[in-house]
Length: 497
Image 1 (tube, rainbow, N blue to C red):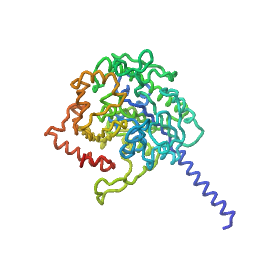
Image 2: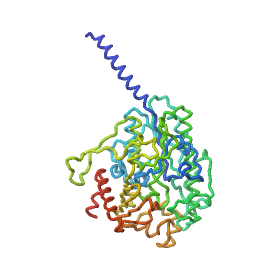
Image 3: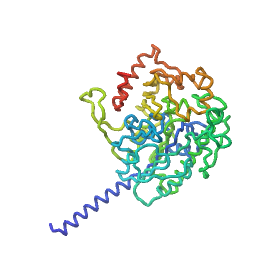
Image 4: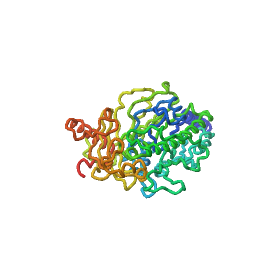
């Protein structure tokens, strides 16, 4: 075969292989992951008829909202590492916060969601709150910076990325700081101290960088008080501030969706809305009670036939990365097991995949089968807040193992300063804070077993009740197997303290 013929044959083959690859990339569709900060299921779509969240309610009406969606840990950095890897945070190494002196980072050998997508032909960008590390482990092609606490301006900053002439499909990770607590300030602008227990937290609602936000305010008498909180004047004031912050962030998410529609890309995009975990009040954030772990999840799939439904599957934030990879047609990564906590039997793999599973097979169902149990893993919030807890939760029973039960339950600074908490705390250890006393909140037994069906507030511990001994032991076995299969170093704490 002469060289000229070879040239044309090889050129033809290369052209066709490249053309096929280009076609494969062009058939991939866009992905937008919207993440808020410290938001419980307080939305119109979830039955709250006071709070104004028109953008997210419209998204739910065009998709599915999950009523039993749970973070694995009610702590920001740790939870976000789970969302972006599909692994429990005791496997990511992101045990607590990245910022300030904490400096927790995710293990560098993990393949995170943005890296996997970029390697498969996606262009990627993140906007605003990042809070995981390192930048290389969670590498995005672009980091879109914008004014703090101004979700609409944040959204406007994504327009160039969404409207780019780049023909590759895109992945946008858009994370607001709202409705995270802001600060407590007096009328003269100075910061409130612990003595000013009647001064509510502003949840960032006084931020001067939010000119494009339409302020939506609430009368404290109208808010719906969560059952885990005391119904007091100050708790209602704080909740009204929180509601305002929720409405702020809803406007930002609405703007992103508006930009997608104007660009003609809404109908070709998977959109997921979620919060890193629940509301920032004692009794929720940093705990493994449902108030801290249960959070909103709305998924809008471009091909769904069953829209505007509520799905009651028990799902976990470890399911988010598998869902997105499934949508993108990307194989999940596998990893070698790092530690051998117990002798490994011959039939047990020494490698593992992701800890969650894709939601796509159950997306159009209201009552899917086989999604009846989730697990949680919390170790730190901040570095000084060591309080490891492991959880198994089904539809009927929930077991919390307080591994460091001999310690006083630690409080994050913003939660400790909450006037709602301080009001109860200063009344003494027997004062009620929602369904439990201050003392019961601060000092916990080793095991907490709850009948979730009968006791959704987790107020009656059944762990010491002889009638529930077999149920307790069965759930301990489930926890041990979860820890073993996910390579949790705290498995050793069953053997020694």
